[in-house]
Length: 230
Length: 368
Image 1 (cartoon, each protein chain N blue to C red):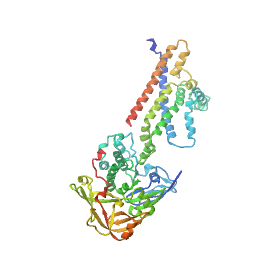
Image 2: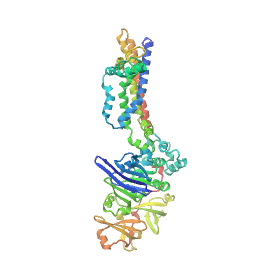
Image 3: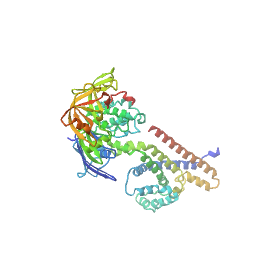
């Protein structure tokens, strides 16, 4: 059936999207857990600033984020230049740029989910663990994390789904290079721009909907399972 | 060696805690109205909060000393803390909760002993959501004990339980106190519960120590007696159960030379393991007489000596020594009419029906 005859390039775009989304959500998870915990449990000077800064990508146009990433990580940006000169590493317009763009865009979503999940964990259960001889780390890993797990997992899946849909920051910072940075949304965009690409666009849109829907269902199922367990 | 020595200050918005105390008894009851600072004191002792200044030592070891810059974290203070609502970990089952604070060195034997004593061995595989309030409180006590604490703290351990269950928990606590000799602080705003466990009280009011000592000594202080009266002054007496007469529905209890009759409230067999029972008698249920009275329905007539007469606003509390102390409440007019004086020989009279049991035996504990 011609309708579902995927070309090599389409497969590549789908594979790339999943790869970027997986790496992005895995890489941002530990940082998001740390940030979420900090925001949920600690009071410090400049907390409002950190909170605002973390949430910023949620309201900024993704293109703006892509622009800022170029300013910082581009070959002439202050970090990008440093990496290029000292380590011969180039980020912008590579696969890693797509990952980095996705991380920045999806980070607020994960942090928010994890922050709420940790806030929901009764601090007094942590106190109880401390009096039973558990240090801060043991308490964190044996009480806080397991009790916040549903929120952490749903944050992870939310981040994964958001990465799959990422477009603006990616095209600005990573470009639209087939096989390297052309993820599904970018491929859909290109297909729509080129004459006769409607069928390609339709196929990729279908896959995109399917993947996102599966992620959301998985998140729900996991949530229910964990709530039942606790 | 003192169990706890503390001199601490803490200021919070709208509340100041300024406590000096040296506790020496194995079990101390901390009593005070809600908001007096009892829980704050416990949190400072256990390190969950930090004082502004002062020092705290547990068994003569500093756990906090402001000027010496000592402030051990909670996990290093070796305090078993039984919280008001138990605070069992909901994602772990009963045995995992019990073993959470278990030191490697704790012998299997001790684990078995404590869990047997608390009758929780059958609950091991259950989830926390599957056990009842009374069971949860027992698991919480076991969990705290198994962390091998130097000091056991119980914060309102009975408040979430109904009256019957409280007495049940108390009946589990008493043998633990006797067996393990772990120093213990029990906080409660319920005087009868507290007195079942100990007569040694630390009274806290408005963030300060209002009194420390034996209950019968403390009531000599007017302010304290007023405070204690709010919760209801009571006599809490430990007696030996000698015999249950099921036919007459009576039980015979004793203390030294005195024999005391009480209405039987339970099947006598229940008490065979533990002949010690704790009874409660309200001061207003005790009548004083200058002689033994023969033609009267009151069965309990005990001879004793007036140890103390404490006048409050409109009544007089008469502490009579019978080998155990008994508070009787009389009016000022009665005191005058009978010419009561300290040192006088007096008879305390009370009906068998006035005696209320405070600790029940262990009946079907697993169903509770």
